[in-house]
Image (cartoon, rainbow, N blue to C red; front, side, top):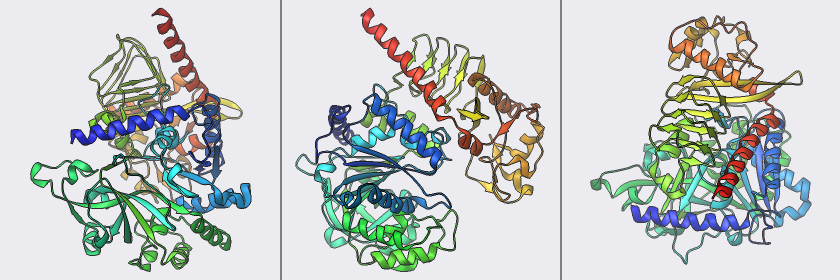
Length: 593
């Protein structure tokens, strides 16, 4: 196991070194992406992405000579990452005409509001900070580093990935991952069966598959989207693989379980330009797309000789079923039926998802394997005095300033924040974009994230606070069911009573059938960043100590409204101030030496 992780660690370090050589320099033709495209859910999110890209390019933190684009989903109903893919194809043709079909494109799906990791909601998951680099890497730079070898071994086409996953692999020195086959080509990673229930699973052709070596090019009979274990067995997706637990993203097993059952799960996939043009023609034929299409579930399930159209009517994995969905799926199936699904099996690989608070905390503080593979740091690009205290080194400090005397508990993450000397942060907490300069004990399992908002052309501040275990995606359709919502382990109804707030339609910012923590107007608007933190921590304290704290006297916003009113420029200004202060401190330390 250590040998494998060492190989992956060394391989990634070499990739990182090569990536660093491209940063701030013009990429050579044919050696890098012609286009790097980010998707955004709406115009506000798109503007936030464009501002951050512009700042990265200004600082020369990205390779130059690349066409970086942000493509915003069309207004109206949500169209999913599949609909976004189709829309991006249309945008590329509009911008470049026929020339776009000669491009090598990296398409990163980064729309959505990150309800399961709200610290990324305002500025985007693709700009999530990582605990390494000087200055710190964000997910965008990591994506460019992980895929740096791909463009030079890829025919013109589009590589499609998501903004919240990490794929690490090791292959032989003479082996190469090549995307040159017609149709679709996907990477596959050996995984535990339980992981397969929440991902896509490939049913590989057994005659072409050995399960040995680091890299295999194989054909796929069909693709299953989030299947149950019984379905995996029925379709022949389950493989017995030696040392699976050592070589893959399977869970930890005892020595007696080394010959483990595995399935091969999805991550990223490539389409050549013939397929891209076929999908674009399909998109043009649809007057208006009014349903959510999944690029994985609705594209890949139509592929391979074993594909059937049964999935087109299965809406069990759909967040919101629209009347158009089944019809669009059936048309896509007819369009893509018979198309090859080529699979690049990476037997020595690991797939990490960083899309929830729990995953973010685990992988960046407790997961020793990922820490080793990526060289993650406990303190990354921060001012962190020796007199500041941590209970152990599992905490992660990212581009932050911690004053002497503060305490950060094990398993907690502090990012883009200023923490005063009398602050104690409990275990397993996330503090993001905040300025805390009061004497306070922040409880364990706390999520605290501050946003700048603009109201009547004035900059104000709001801090959201939750438990890292709270479910912000859960909502109820009736006001009488609000009691079933939980805030820090306490019924929201009980919390509202402590806060002197009444249950009504006006308490929620969304329509009358979407009542949840995401839409609850419970966070006070304040004139300063530090004051917003103080008020939100008072709100939390009242719940934990069952003491009254009147919120009815404040102007209150929901998380949904905070994102609508967010002032990206002011939030980036706060980050820039921290960045510049850290740079000055480092220059001073160098001159002192």
